[in-house]
Image 1: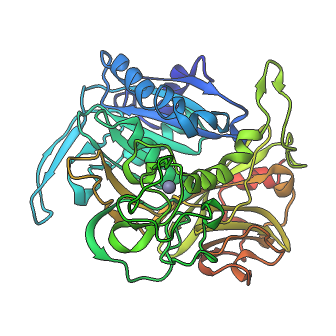
Image 2: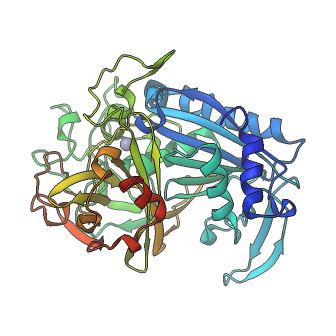
Length: 480
Ligand SMILES: [Zn+2]
């Protein structure tokens, strides 16, 4: 598919659209690096919008600057590059630059300039509107391109041909203009993959909530129960300071790597909430992750990093045993939550191994069962969120504007062997919200009933009839 992706995509689109409606002039995909079979890695698909025939080098250079030579060539993500595959999709837009919208102070749109681009994304430069926004057919066009060119992907980054410095993230996708630095992208990956909290504070508010769920924020000051107590040296006073170590600061103190309890964080709060270090990537983007954030990210990525690398003939040595089902293939299900109802949108079968971390951290999590058997389980730290983010200005990072859309899609992977011939009336899909409790040792009870976790059921799909399921899934379960 790689070699002839361009033509097959256009042929495929023509089956549905007339030639004049194909939204791009050409499409191709380039593997920038591949660490292993797509199902076993976190595959990041990068797609450009508003890059015309003469702009492709500008796009390629931006992808290299932000990712290949940016995020994946520095500290934590360089060390964990083996957890990722990076695929660059070149969609050639009819016009150069993306459309723009402008809003007045009351949030009314006062100007809209359209451009005929591959994805039809707009840059609005407005904090309250997540800086960028999709056009009416953006989601469908993006899905079409990815379905053909990078069907197995975990994360999507859309790069806009716009000079702006602000972007919008959430739900496994980030949309960024050309003015975005790799450091800010790396900070956003901390939210998207690790559900890390912001360690900066913009306002002088006092935090009055209960213990924050984020693993790198706390409202507690007791050494015995501190959630990152493992990282604090015995002689370090708690609390340790505010914006900096309360003097006298030890001469060997490293502001991003030596851990204590520093007041201020969670975006807005100068008082009443604490972070682990003076300055972490989750505070000002530039430094590496602090040890507390790095450990969370490490936990999330370890299985992907250690899974079978690619070798000349297929799978190479494995450093982590792959599940029994590895090699027999798996099914990638796209599930949609809409108005409180879950629906399986599509199913697609892939060869090769897949890796499921089996981790349940705070935020959304999903479980798929067939009868009494659990066949899929995982966290969805970036689901159901829309998060605006900015390059740091002269007065520090700007607080994220967060929306929680009531409809979103998420991906579930299930071993083909589990689904083949299964009784689909016994299939259940649960979406839950998990509090701070971690499911390191999950029992056999359904996730939604697990007493060890602070679980709130969100939606459930059960008592299915075949007619409720897409034909793509029925064909996999009951092959002719
Ligand atoms: Zn941190």
